[in-house]
Image (cartoon, rainbow, N blue to C red; front, side, top):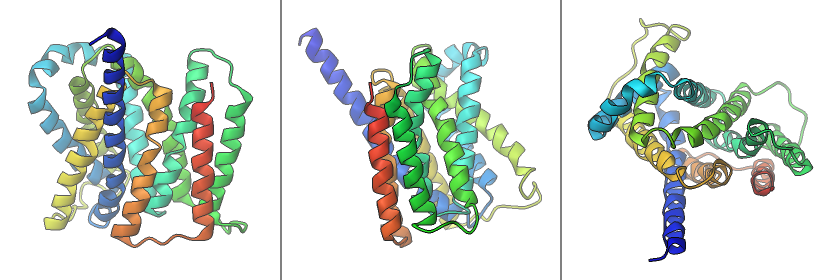
Length: 295
């Protein structure tokens, strides 16, 4: 097999990894929506992180031991992990105030944010097409949040999801740098291990440690589902895929996540669609494509 064919095969494999990751992430909105009925957001992230960290440690114990000291000394590793936690925390918190489909689509706004961050990060000129894409996306966000009328008040959940989208933009760009220095197992283990402590810290700002989470067959099964299907597998696939696929193209692939999330929200949670919401989703989808395909 020639070098060109090998590269094409590697690229195709990496692309498939990102698509599968997006599909699995789409399911996390359903699990999270169910879990926040039984425990606070911080507890959801705590249990999700600790289960994921333990699984990753035993899967990649040799590599983690070899790279752990170097990862602790890496500023970009710390930045990447903290940004990831804040993005996931705000995204999960947004589900308390808005629908799963709204949160998924608004979070997908990062697909426009990523190329803009790359332009600034690499000191490249931002083209007019990016500004047009952002303007179009804002119109779409307005439609799915408030419909075709003026809003009575700001939707907190939609706002939190939008902030999360910006943080995810930086998260994806930082990952592109990390995968050239560390293995995917070490990157994700470090992140989730740190998230365990960060999530415990945020418990204090919610209902405190005295507020015990409700653990039963439903909550525990959803915790393991969100840890394995929403963390271990997709985050490893994400790190593996971005070794070959650029952050800008990866962000376009991740645009599939809200599509899966919306379909699952309709099937599993019975969330309804309005003309305004469908219109908003179509507008955002167009904006995401426009923003991520601009050269």
